[in-house]
Image 1 (tube, helix red, strand yellow):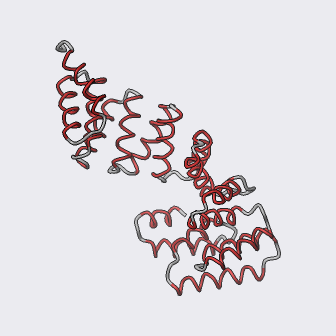
Image 2 (cartoon, rainbow, N blue to C red; image 1 turned 90 degrees about the horizontal axis):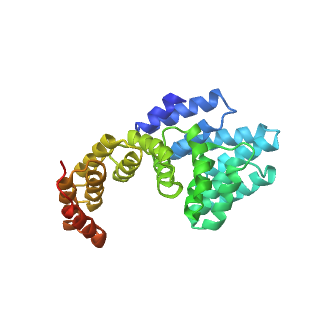
Image 3 (cartoon, rainbow, N blue to C red; image 1 turned 180 degrees about the horizontal axis):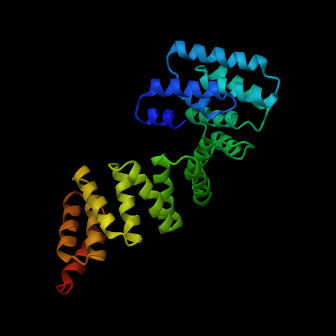
Length: 288
């Protein structure tokens, strides 16, 4: 499984698809290789071959739960929305606790823009008897959209116990912990992981720098902000964070003033707040 994941992350998608195919044939009871293979199957010939495999498995299955799962996988492969929803209805009639069915229904409803119904499907997927990590992810992100931040943190923390390479979730989780929950220690750990996975993402760098300062990791904060400045030299928020770093944590008045002035020159919108800060900095006695 690790080799297949590495191939997928490296962008070698056809090789990854074949690797997942081998895995699900070797271990037909495992769901994740099937899901990953489906997500990477785009060519008509490969779709038809996978459909044939699923049809064969459905025809010999004597378990309602297994048939529900297989029909849910067929639904994920179906390109026609009407056909997909028909298969999902059949799956849920066989097993109303089928995680893959609820997960696929949630994705289908999200794509249609039916957010409320999608949320209920995400919830059913995340609370089903045999929950998949992707259901926890989807439900956690849906909870963020609802503004239910503590519940979102719970779901996403459970998710990253299974999936350790999802930089988007580490970023979202770290940001929630930083801005809403105010658990700065956990925020630092989550955003540090996001930074390690995606070191050139501006949003990650900015929030990582704030979490680093909250935890006393000032050198890490400075390094991240300098990296952000190289990536986005015209972004005023980078200079705001640098100014705060120099004013509050390095007591470097000149550097703080210079970065606040650059922030204003680049069109930063916190004009009154920054001018008050500049007035205070210019009125301070020179630092020894």
